[in-house]
Length: 598
Ligand code: SAH
Image (cartoon, rainbow, N blue to C red; front, side, top):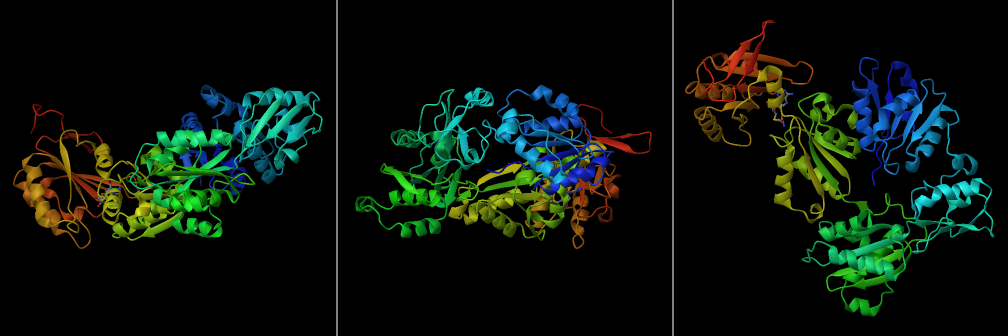
């Protein structure tokens, strides 16, 4: 699972050196700085409280270079569930103190140790168990789940009061701690994949050593409830604890099958995939296969191979129905889900908005924080700024949309989390449609299981309208004047129809260096239906350096006023201008047709 990288928050430039030291040991971490007080930061914010609360709610670990009180007061209203809170730490501006505040069950102390080490200080660990025994019973390392977390606190208190503990089973992190271990102790910590009874005197940790391999025959597209019950019954019969299941493993070819995800979701574990080649290798290594199984076809064998590939251990149970096979295997060590098989690929087509970060949606920003790969036209990739740091960039020329979509789908099919970046809205003359064109036309089997998402953005016309008033206040349409992907005859017809229908028209791609006559033609068509005084808005480089907004009349519209970074809004017969005292104008289109017009 992708762990969210932390955010380091600085309130002044004095904090930056310490912040940067911290970031140097936390891959993917971002520096947030208070606007006006900090420079050279990844993200500049103005609202401290809103920003922090949003990060916290999104589960982002927070390291504030500030007083503990500020963090406590800011986050206090959100402190409802300690099992879900991300780590929150305060670090002194000069790096002399590292204070873990929240997220005790989510690794705040180990994060504090990591930060303190780079700052060369001792972290202010206040959890008694951690100090005395070097261990947090409630917060086991990755690969172990505590079956009875509610007993952990009193169990630790008992040990702190002088009781000793007996270890049953193997867990190096417990064995290597300073716990008062004694063979004849009354209190027991048991490490087992078996379903056993836990009590206040017996803490049970389930290691992530159980793997489940599943295969489905094509065509059996059921929702998964039968398969879930089937797998759960197998776990019961094998006396294995569901909490020890590390993951569900399947073939990349089955990735699109809804039942697979349903099984993983029901067990609350990740799903990982192996390619047919990887499965074949394991099948050939384990050729001591039951003959009876061979007679039943290859599906059970593939399920076995999946479980063996994921566990590098022993099969414990295998069962099948006519179209579903499930194998359970046991690994000698907790399975590292990040290095075993590949995750379901994700492809997010996102819109950055027209320019600056202030016009990028929080959803798009969140996606950018978590992706592994960015695909897009280099100019647009630059728009993502610091959010693109530490990712693999796959830049391409502006015209290679189809090739770009194919690259993105192929990368996602490898299990990567890919963001395809468009400017403005990704669904408006941009990459989202290109992705679906390729998806439909080429329909590679490996693409079927990819999770695809489109995250909207503010389109150029909306930004232009907002800057100048409300020209899109009534019915409007958009027309691209580029005749690369459609013939001019269609464009001409659309302009005529839009003019006749009295739509406000947003013209995208109005001109390029080689292509200027289309705008002149468009104007000529419009003048047949619209008054020469109709207001026209030319908005250039919105949200970027060199932003300019100009208003003229239809009569004066000329290609020289625009370039390929300009969006043009042509008013309807109702669109009006209001003179402002600074010499500029507002442009708006009234919402009703009975209001006064010129
Ligand atoms: N997906 C984009 C549109 C891409 S087509 C969106 O929703 O905005 C490219 C055209 O969009 C440009 O030729 C221009 O007409 C317009 N455009 C894109 N970004 C712009 C910006 N920052 N300022 C003005 N126009 C822009």
